[in-house]
Length: 208
Image (tube, rainbow, N blue to C red):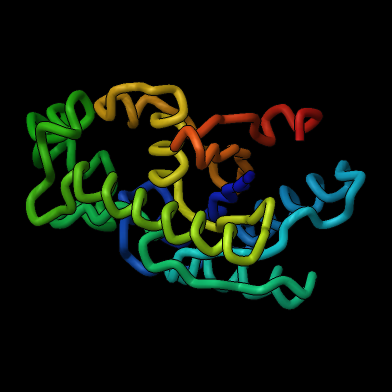
């Protein structure tokens, strides 16, 4: 089974820790996602490869997912557990603002996010368990429906977490990984081995 994860594009609160704040895409963000999907499909020799589309409920993901669902006639399922990590009191604050007001706390979070949690935020362990629940829900549906490949429209933190799991890295390394705005990332799920394999992303589109 394969899952492709599309990160949302630029939003009105880009350059902040948006987290669960429900901000909207900008025109540029919409274009970033459209271009990524179109470039991918232009290189696909099998048409639209997804049997279904899943999305975070936040509008920067869901509204674009609804467009894709209507455009390509694919089933859309909203998975609440796919939304971004909640940053508590740091929600919608820029890293510059946090650095100016809480430099020590920000440093602790960047270095050891499993050990330090921003005030009133979701812990890294809670985030990890939530995303694992989302994956299990999606795997179960794929098995039931005999789907081989689906698209998830989601967030940078979710993609970084899956990259971390695929590379068998410590979760404290999650913030060192990349997931640029509007990029597509391809993973393979091995249900028998209960493992995730990271295949490629749109930075090297020939692999897609």
